[in-house]
Amino acid sequence: MAKGKKSPTPKLASRHPLTLNAEQVALLTEMATLVYYSDGFVYTRDMMRLTKLLADRAGPNFRRACLAAHAG
Image 1 (cartoon, rainbow, N blue to C red):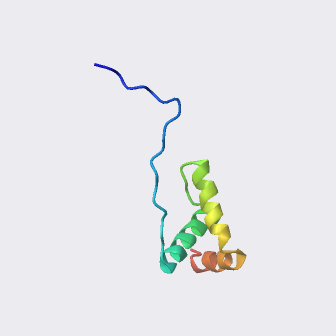
Image 2 (spheres, rainbow, N blue to C red; image 1 turned 135 degrees about the horizontal axis):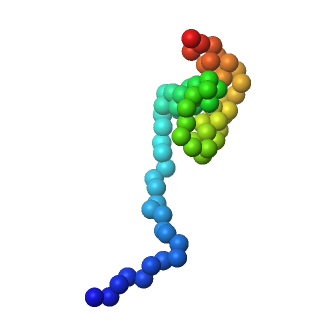
């Protein structure tokens, strides 16, 4: 039985773009803001960079309002 040839670089499966509605975008932004700016927990540095990217897209006014609304 012949063995298949192994590729030197793996081929990644194509992914469909993620489509979110406005409410989902707002919730994702809020969650990322709370995780990043209130000492939330992430598993990896890549996750930390992603939460910061999402949180910072909304701007400082959103960040202040979000953190004030969830101050505990």
